[in-house]
Length: 303
Image (cartoon, rainbow, N blue to C red; front, top):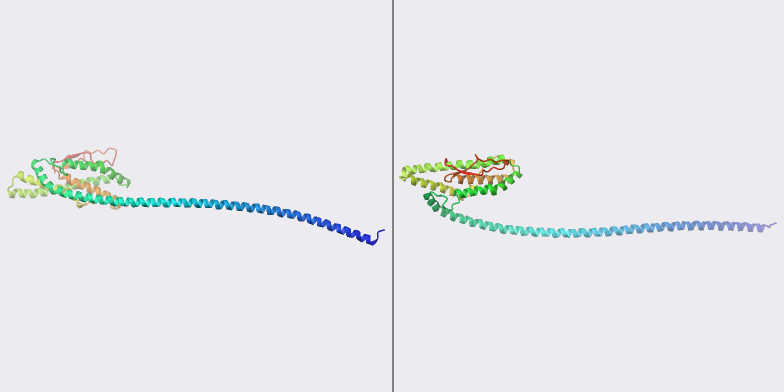
């Protein structure tokens, strides 16, 4: 039989073995948890590295885009400077050309005044010979015909395109043009009648021959024609245009310039001997409603 001391020893051994087993389990559990923590830590490190890499890529991309924006901004600044320089050059060139145009205009005005002083004597000689085409007169039949053709062939296409683009109708424009030529003819017919009445009184009270009075009458008409030629078109009868509120200021300016040109030219044509008139009656515009100006000019002996 075992003694009590042996029994106590066995219990201690069993208890010690139990403690050892629990310690082994604890160490095993700890090692497993430690491995899990290390694995989790490794994953966190990998995730952290991935975030760092993405951050680096983002910063690099941002820096590249920032450089691109800076480069684009520099190009825009250079382009803006170039435009400013060109604008300055254009303004300088325009001012120089404007001064040249003013100088040329001043010279033309001096030449016109000189011509005006010379033309009276030449007109008188022309009237005596009965040949108004003999001198280089700016109001001769050929010169006025040429000026009308310039209006029709050179100026009119540009004017027409401008009016069409601004919704001006061809009917309105045709009425305006015809009215200016008609008003000019009527106005000059009245002035010629007044001159004839004055010379009728001169003929009856001066003792001059009818031929001499006729020459003076023709000279007076020619002087009136030259006076109108040398005057500014703006000084003539200002065209009164209806429906001014319907069109823009730019369009009205174009219409008034056209009206002034037609009225001025109509006055000069009406004072030619014999008077010149546009052949409205035989003008056939065809398919184009903007074909307004007649092709032909006829001489009229009825004024």
